[in-house]
Image (cartoon, rainbow over all chains, first blue to last red; front, side, top):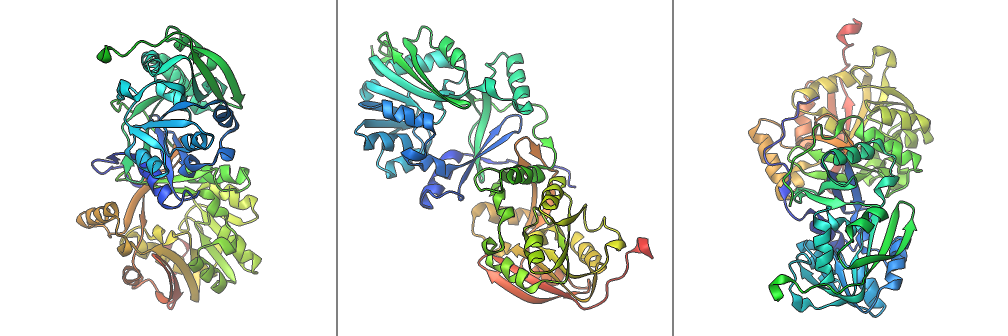
Length: 261
Length: 261
């Protein structure tokens, strides 16, 4: 066997996720052609056939279908990817605006007819308006990131919402794993003062890798604690195996962002 | 974004390929469940749905079907994986012995009824006997590894063969790529004195990664030069896009291995 002498550089910093989506889109969204590899910082790889980002509504996980049937009106789709949720909702009459930080995701979802703004939610000005529903689907409750970041993001979303606006998101319940590597990873998170379901990871595709980022898997109970003081309250939970979707409702008006006062 | 502070250790050294095969076998060999990720040492990732290692003969690439139709008799299948070629040949009446270094591959192919010896060909004693056909399929001409290793492996295989024995292998023609990363990688190989189609890589699956190893993609012309003096001659080539299969025939008797004199 060869001693590892990695070539200088390693993967190129870039939009690994978006390029995988573009490749899959160019191949007609078919399975078996394009993969995105999530690399956790302990070296664990999770491989996704990105064709699933092009799934029709009846192929979505059941708890995501539950969300689509409940959502509607003016909808903000945070991290819209290839637009599968936005398209399903638009077909049901909703008025959807997507946001995504991935240039490739923005390209593909626009090609598919979705109105999409590039960047984070926080980067969008108040002129984006307020929404009846906000989506953090595709496990995008993960964007809550940490105890520190979650209240900021939720408060930011409250400023795009009215009292009564519902926020739908989903997660994997990290307490339900029994895989020894995941248990070890949870323990390491605890020791470092992070929530146990934190996943420090990057997305790789061919020669590309995104920056490392923290993605948060959390129990419904942990979510309940994180929403305190943000104006949001958990009003419904729909469970499907290790996955669950949650409906939050805004019960107190979000304050306008400081920059717009 | 987070600064990369990789956790100590990274992936665990282990049988990433074999564990992916075992996982896929446990799931009935179905597509969309188990992936093996080949990581080249410049950071380029190649993802394979390992269900293809369970393909039936009519799903094999056409140039591999061409081999299966020509092979027979007593067959040595080098790097037999999950046994797709061995099984196809056994169904056509051949008497096949597989060898594989991956414990997981040995486990799965035995479960599927293939007679398999664990280890490299070089590690097998002369009691394995001599063969009418030798297979280096699944792109296992890559096991020729380098200018230095190739004559050793080919001479070793000649000692498991008789005059007239045919060796079938396949490769990707590395001169046919136009991907800038692959062109850059070829150039770097040249500068380091390696054959341009050398790929230094490891196979990753979940928490596991194999050791780094060199795998050789070569043009038919390069192969023609490497076989000189080994007793083998190229007698047929079957091309399919960037892939090709080759038939070598042993024209001079292989010497018994030194240890058995």
